[in-house]
Length: 507
Image 1 (cartoon, one colour):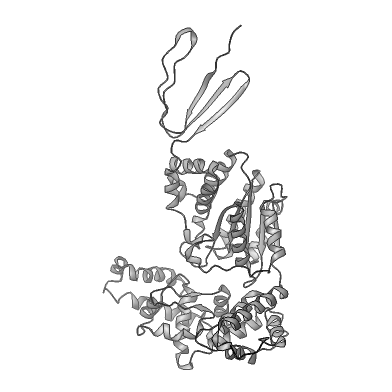
Image 2 (image 1 turned 120 degrees about the vertical axis):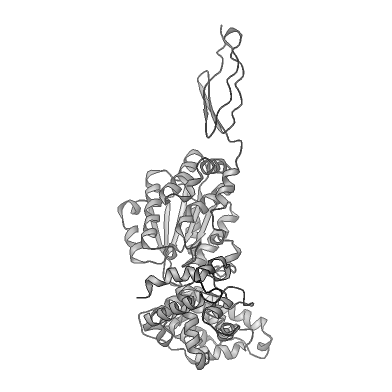
């Protein structure tokens, strides 16, 4: 009777040389093999059973390389996005539950889901709230929140590396595989989106068999680089879902732009993707307004002598109607009323004076009126300068400080801060001049670019673009006579960047 000995038939080395083989033994028994110096896959046959052992001696070096290419600002929990938009308690409950069930269902019919709706519909709030819930359940594989015009958060080239990094931290099985992929070919981080998706996400997920399903959430696809890139991302993800049995659930949120709608209608995407329209919800807006007005009444000392209910039910009803069932109008009203330097009751009176129920089919008619009302609070003598400030913010929405804009427009220090002070409900007015100036919602920029909506506050005309171009070129000479020397001065680097982006658009 003979015992069948185990015999190693393959010692395949990944990314390095294997160790020297062991010496010959007695009676056919081989000596011990040498130790490999890099990741190895050892296949052993014992009797009828085949086993495979995968060993990665260093799981982290590739992850460190990958980290240098990701955009932390685009993550759902980044400090850059604070305060993140969230669904108000007891709102969007059915939608959130539907998306959560799909994201955590390993047997879901579709691995891709498209959440779409107009600006101000609350898509980002839904995505943020869902990210937090999935994270608590241990099912969030990664997130990416695009930001229009941002040099990194608006760049599609960092999408898949950022998602891959989060997946590596989320699932231990994937960490070594993703790290090895980057370590053996760091140039993958500079290759095409197709190669990045394949090498950083699809192949590692394929090798990590029996991994639990994880969700990847991509918000604001319509805010990244350009139409063609947006379509390419959709087609790559759709093609991957069709060719591979993905355990990933990929949720994409965007406005229903025509080119995105057309892409989702393509046959191979229709087979793997489902969609949900983030519909109007007057009831949810009513809940939000009631709760927020109650909070303002409770927290502001100036409201002690104002009787409840406040506001009166008929006023609340008009506000809900004017919202068209979308949160951006309601949120803007609350920011306007909740001004720490004003009486909330008087602020609400200003809004109420202009409450008119319109028959227009546009859901933004009342929002436009509210924006006009807020902008009109700036004294008329400052309006030309205000339009120049808004022009900078509209055409270059990256994070410029009020100091930057003061210098760019050749204004006295503190002028921008003074002029935009009444606009806290549409702009995130920084407490310090060195902090970034931001908009609360992208719909405000849409409003400023549309002459039919913004009227005398329209800043999308060729005249404003030419004036802005002149301001940029003039600002380049402030530090040095030679504008290109300003490249060495980080404070002025963005002027050069803005010039290079702006000159082709001056016509």
